[in-house]
Image 1 (cartoon, rainbow, N blue to C red):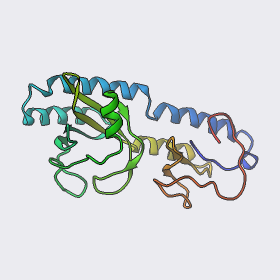
Image 2 (cartoon, helix red, strand yellow; image 1 turned 30 degrees about the vertical axis):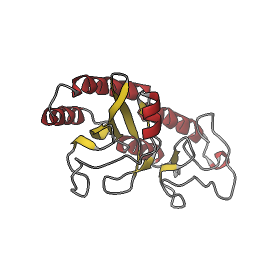
Image 3 (cartoon, one colour; image 1 turned 135 degrees about the horizontal axis):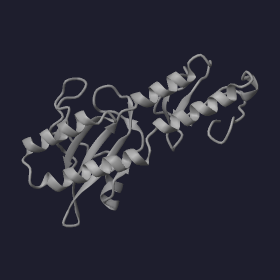
Image 4 (tube, rainbow, N blue to C red; image 1 turned 90 degrees about the horizontal axis):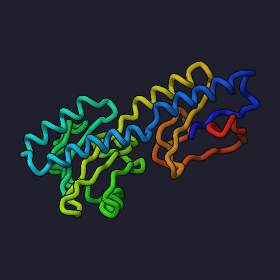
Length: 212
């Protein structure tokens, strides 16, 4: 969702520009093509996971990570959600990633239940700064049972750049929300990431079915 000021306050023709900006944003947001791409990469890693040593698996993850700018980080975790291979090897505070547990993450239960790739809800990062992140996940399935998973932390910088460029010069305020109405990123001083969006006083009129 992208928040803008009231339509009545917009100069003539600006609504059309915002609608075009909305379409450009849709082209850059997380979509089915990105999930499909991750599913293919994860499938390749899963198929070789049982035959490669951990150093070889580490090298494979580093190769995938450096070749795909959509992901800030990518890792392989065992069935107990403990990191066994990860790229990059250290987090933003220069702490090692290997051996770190993510067993309490809320996405783990549905991933084990469905045994299918999924996109997590937006949550706070544990890689240093507590920035909002979303993670693409693919289970490693051995003999029909959950045996670990591959995680890819999405790069929000591209989306942020599109929003900044689209709003530049328009005096437009934007807020990107997740499906639960929590703030992912915003240029509004009265909104805080990872908290529910608060519209505040006043009224708004939607420009079209994409922008409200």
